[in-house]
Amino acid sequence: MGSAAGRWILLVSILGSGLAGIDATVVNVALPAIGGSLGAGFTGLQWTVTAYTLTLAAFILLGGSLADRFGRRRMFIVGVVWFAAASMLCGLAPGIGTLIAARTLQGIGGALLTPGSLAILQATFAPGDRAKAIGAWSGLSGVATAIGPFLGGWLVEHASWRWVFLINAPVAALVVFLALRYVPESRDPAAAPRLDIAGAALGVVALGGITYGLLEQPSQGITALPVLGALVLGVAAGVAFGVVEWRSTSPMVPLDIFRSRQFTAANLVTFTVYGGFGAVFFLLIIQLQVVSGFSPLAAGVSILPITFIMLALSSASGALAYRIGPRLQMSVGPAVCALGLVLMLRIGPDASYVADVLPGVAVFGLGLAIMVAPLTATALSSAPVDRAGLASGVNNAVARAAGLLAIAVLPAFAGLGGDDYTRPEAFNAGFDRAMWGAVAVLLVGAAIAAISISNHALDEAGHTPGEPGEALRDVARIHTSPHPHPQVIASHCAVAAPPQLIDCGEGADDTSHR
Image 1 (cartoon, rainbow, N blue to C red):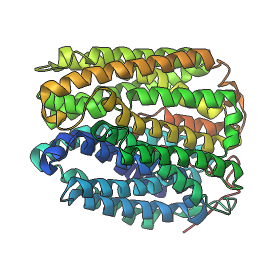
Image 2 (cartoon, rainbow, N blue to C red; image 1 turned 135 degrees about the horizontal axis):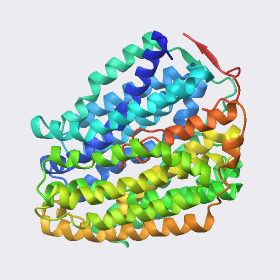
Image 3 (cartoon, rainbow, N blue to C red; image 1 turned 180 degrees about the vertical axis):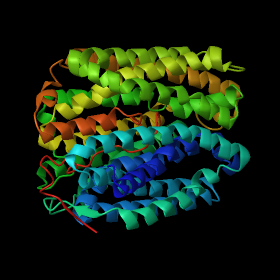
């Protein structure tokens, strides 16, 4: 890691993951401006966020498999170029429909580049340097995440919301140049001989159909043929996905991993709690601008304490979980997050940042810091060590899917739709209802954790000797970084480890060459 080449490789990885990481936060800040410029309704703003998350969640595991099979540097570069091209389309979009289509393409690019940004570090750094490299990647990516809301707000105020997307192009050009010059190619000779294209396609149809039905139901009605048809298609595709994965010899998601009761429980908690706060910041950023009168820059900066609290406390939280077991933190953390949301009910017309915004934001960040590290470590530790990469990818995909569905469900539950985001009184009432709905879901997640999580869930990972244990801790370290969720802390930064990412030996099974 101390060599010049190692520093360049680390820089490439950080810049690449930062593209996807910053994008999510800056887009949230720009939503009211996008809606006003393109004449979009509230559903259009929801689609602007969910279109990206949908394809990212559906294809990210496939992206890891493609990198292992065809070359990590190659697929990383393809992803960066794809992401940049889609970003240009977003920035030049003449209407909301074009923007949503371009965001869908952008998510595919993110699914190709984000597994590669981490896999490159895993493949090129020696075991002794790997932990330091991943720690630096995690910390500096967190700094990039923190810059996102500030950058987005500044661009919206002083340039245009279009520059939120267009700014990706020069950064991508630099990343491609440095990757071609400094990053060695690597691939996994033991990668699955067949790609699970059918599984990936069914995953997209399942998530897409269900998301469409949920987003359009408030305006069209549940009995409308397009809505009902989309929901039925989505559910049918989800069932077909399970059948295909069960029968496949090279499944994207081997379903037997769910035979571990603790792994299943950890992912159920993940789905519940990430669903609880998945739409919070989507709504909070709009609430701050439309109802409280904050500028885009001020609204973006308002949520930075969450990132800073996560950066400061996540490592200690993870260490505590290994000492006392994860159940207490996984139960208390969601409850503290719920308390933060109750405090956010103070955010209304003429809200004061110090008195009304900061308390809820800070308490919510504390809850995340308490919960995220133990939750992810439990999900990873509950799977066999040689499947830690798969466990990481599945857990990350579950979190993304939960956030995606939350943005579709929670606003509908709160009665938000149409042009409500342009009417402060209507949006304020819907925001309050949405926060109470999220509180209820988070408390359910806390109860599930208290009932189902064992305090011995981390024992195996904590006591496994040798490189497999180190590899598992490397991945856990990544997930305790401030990117647990795409809409919350810009996870959007994609810290999913692809199924074959973890090298449980000394690199003998990997090939690297320029």
